[in-house]
Amino acid sequence: MAASEEHDSPTEAPQPAVEEEETKTFKDLGVTDVLCEACDQLGWAKPTKIQIEAIPLALQGRDIIGLAETGSGKTGAFALPILNALLETPQRLFALVLTPTRELAFQISEQFEALGSSIGVQSAVIVGGIDSMSQSLALAKKPHIVIATPGRLIDHLENTKGFNLRALKYLVMDEADRILNMDFETEVDKILKVIPRDRKTFLFSATMTKKVQKLQRAALKNPVKCAVSSKYQTVEKLQQYYLFIPSKFKDTYLVYILNELAGNSFMIFCSTCNNTQRTALLLRNLGFTAIPLHGQMSQSKRLGSLNKFKAKARSILLATDVASRGLDIPHVDVVVNFDIPTHSKDYIHRVGRTARAGRSGKAITFVTQYDVELFQRIEHLIGKKLPVFPTHDDEVMMLTERVTEAQRFARMELREHGEKKKRTREDVGDNDDTEGAIGVRNKVAGGKMRKRRGR
Image 1 (cartoon, rainbow, N blue to C red):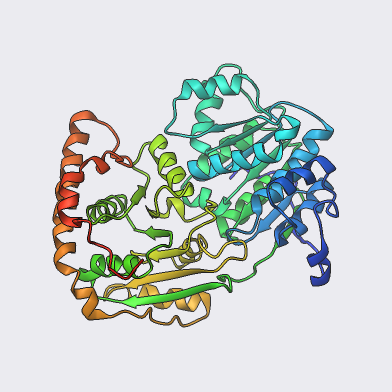
Image 2: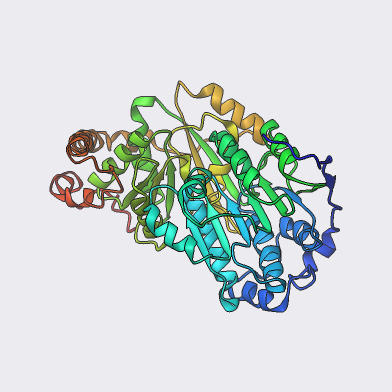
C-alpha cells in the first residue's frame, strides 16, 4: 500500500449521550434543509448511531474511519456529507465510492440518486459484467458521483480516453475489509496514485483488520474513528437457532422448514455457486418460488434475481456470500445457513439480512457431523449458546421420497445446463428458463408439496 506522508493514529469520536441520540434529527447534525426533506421522503425518521457520530465530523471536513455492523446506515453516513458539500461547491466527478461487489454498487447508486433527486445528482455505476462502451459513455457525461468496483475502474482509468479523477474531492471505501480480502489491494494502490492527495477520505468497514489499518495509514489524513459496535453481535430481535442433522438429509430438512414456515420470505445461504444453483433447481422442482444469486451468473441476471426477490415476486432467494453484506432487502423474514460459513464473521453478516430496522426475524443454521467445530466458533464469537429449532423427525422423513426424486431431476438439469454452457459459452444465470423445465417439475410437485394445514 503506497503510504501518504501525512497520517496519524485515528482519534476517537466523542460518544453521544443516549438521551441526545434519541432526540437527534438530521438537521441537528448539520445536514442542509433540502437533504433533510429527502431523508423524510425516504422514510429516514431519525439518524442511526453511525450517522450521528460520522456526519457532523464529515461536515467539518475530517477524514473518517467508520466501524459499524451491517444494516447500520453506513451509506447515509457518507452520502449525506458528500451531497451537502456538492451543494456548496457544485462540480462534476466530485466523489468516488469503491465497493467490493456489483450489487452493492447499484444499491449505493440508488441511495445517492434518491437523496439527491431534488438537486439533480447524477451517478454512474462502473462494475464488471456490463458493457464497457456504455460505461465509457456514462463517464463522458461527467457524473457527480462514480460508484465502482476497483478492477473495472482501473480498466477505465487506463483505457477510456478523456476520463480521469484528477479533480476528485471525496473518496469513499465501503466494506474496506472485504475489498482487501478480495485481493483488490493492487488496484486500490493504483487508484490512490491517480487521485488528488488533497481530498476527503471516508473508510467504512465492519472489521478493523491489519490490511484495513495499513490502508488507513496510506489513504487517510488525521482521521477520526467512529465505532458503534466494538464487539461482534447480532441484533436483539433476531431469533437464532441451529439444527444438528446428518449431512445426507440436509435437503429434506430444508424442505421441511420451508413448509413449516410457509408464508415467510427466505434467504438461504450456500457455500458454492454450484450448490446454490442445484438447491434452487431442487426447490423449483418441488413447486417453491426459488431464485438463485451467485457469482457465475451474468450481471443482468444477478440484478434480475435481486429485483424479483425485492419486489416479492419470489419468496426464496438462494445465495452465496455475494449477498451476505451490504445489500438492503427490507422484507427478509428468515435466514437459513444451509451451508455453515467457514469464517465465523460471515455468520454475522448473513443473519444481518433479517431483523433489520427494528423488525424481528429468524436465523436457522444447519450443522452436520462435519460442521461442529465451525459452529462452536460461531457461538464463541457471538457469545451465546443457540437453541435447537424444533422439528418432528417422522414428518421430515415422510418427505424423503419426493425430495430424492427432485434431487435427481435437479442433477439432470444441472448437467444439461453445463452441456449447454459448453456449447454456447453463456452464463448459467438465474435460469428463469429453469422455470421452463416445468414438465418434470410438476410431476414431482403434483401441486401437493405444501402441507395441507390451511396455509
